Image 1 (cartoon, helix red, strand yellow):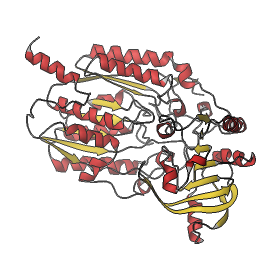
Image 2 (spheres, rainbow, N blue to C red):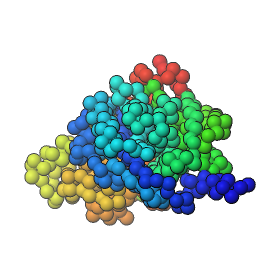
Image 3 (tube, rainbow, N blue to C red):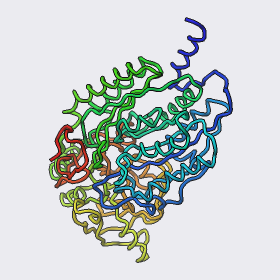
Image 4 (cartoon, rainbow, N blue to C red):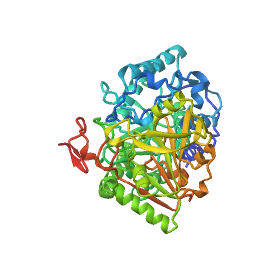
Length: 517
C-alpha cells in the first residue's frame, strides 16, 4: 500500500470520529448554512403560517443562524477542525409556536423562507458548499416533498458541482427524491435526540471531504413499508435499539459509510410517510445497495414488535400507577403520550377522582386560562377556581374544573432545556398535587422544571408528562424514575397508537400494519 493510499484510508477512518484532519486547506472555502425545520401534524387543527413561524421573532440572519440549534452548533464545531473556511448564515426561521402540534405549513410561509435562502445565496455569490439543518417531516399541501423541494431550489442556484449536505430528525418522512438532490444525508440515531450535535459534526466533515475531492458520495434509498407510532420509536429499547445499532455496525465496519435510518412520522398524510433507509458510500454503489437492502429487510423482519405495542386505557393505567406507588416504585413517570395538543384532561381527571396524592401534571396547555388570570390581576398566593384544558380538540376531553392556590404565576425560564414563556402558572390543588399550565404543548424532558418552579420534587410520587419518549433523556436514562406507565386515551385520534383510525388519503396503498381503506 502506498503512503498516499494509507493516508487516504486513514482520513476516511477518522472522517466521522471527531479527529482533526491533518491535510492543509487547498483554497479559501465559503459554506452557506441554513435551518428550516417543522414536524407537521397534518391531522392537527391549526395551520402553520407566517404568524406562527414569527411568533418568537423574525427569521434569523447571518451569525445568528450559526447558533440556532444543536445540529447547527455541531456543524460549526466540526468545521472548526478545518482552516480557511468561512460560514455564511442564510435566512432561517425560528421554531414556530406550537411546535409539532401545528398543522400544514402554508405555501406562503414555505416560499417566504425558502426563497429568502435562495436570495441570500445569490447575494453571496459563489459558494463552495451548503449545509441545511432540516427535519424531514414538514408537510405543505401544495408541495408533496418539501425538504427535497428546499434542496432543489437551492441546487438550481448553486449548480450541480456544489455539494449540499442535510441533517434530519429520525422522525422524518423522506424517500429517494431527497437523495437525488442532496449529496449526503445524516439523521439522528437516538430518540430522545441527544446525538443531533454529533450528526452536525459528521455533516461538516463529510461536506469538507466532498469539497476537497476526497469523497464522492453515492446514496441508495429504501422504503421498508412500515409505519409506526412515534411512541414506539424509543431507541433505548428493542427493537429500535437493535435497528440503530445495526446501522452503526455497518458504519464501523466500513469507514466513511453513512447509514441514516428514519422511523417516520405517522401524523402526516403525505406520500412518503413511513420508515426510510439512506446508505451513502464513497463511490461504491454496490456496497450502498447491500447496506440499504440489509436494513430494509431487517426493519421488515421486526415489523411486528416495531408497530404492535398496546397500552392500558385511563382507568387501568391509573390503577397501575397507584399500584406502583404502593410498591415504592416512585417517582412513577406517566406518559400521556398521545396528547399532541397538550391540553388533554383524561389522566388528570382520573387521578383527582381516585383521590391520589403527590402528583405533578407537567403540563396542561391553556393559553386562554393564562390570559384570563392575567386580565383578572391574579398573582401567586391567590385562591382560584378555574376551568383548565380540554379546549383545543374534541379528543382532548372536557375542560376540568379545579379549585386551588395559584402557587406560581409569571415568566418561565428553564436554562436546562432552553424553554421560555412570558406567562406560566402552577395551581396547587392540595394534597401535594399540582398542575403546571403552559401556553402550548410543552414536552418536559428534564427534572430541572422543578427547580425552575421552586418545587421540591423529592415529595412527588407521580409525574404526568405530555411526552412519547422525549422524557427518557432526563427522567429515565439517568435513572431518575423507578417506573414508567404509558396510558392510552379513551378514543383513538391523531396521536394515539391506533393509526387505522386516521383518515389518510395520500399514503401508499400497502403499509404495515394496515392498508389504506
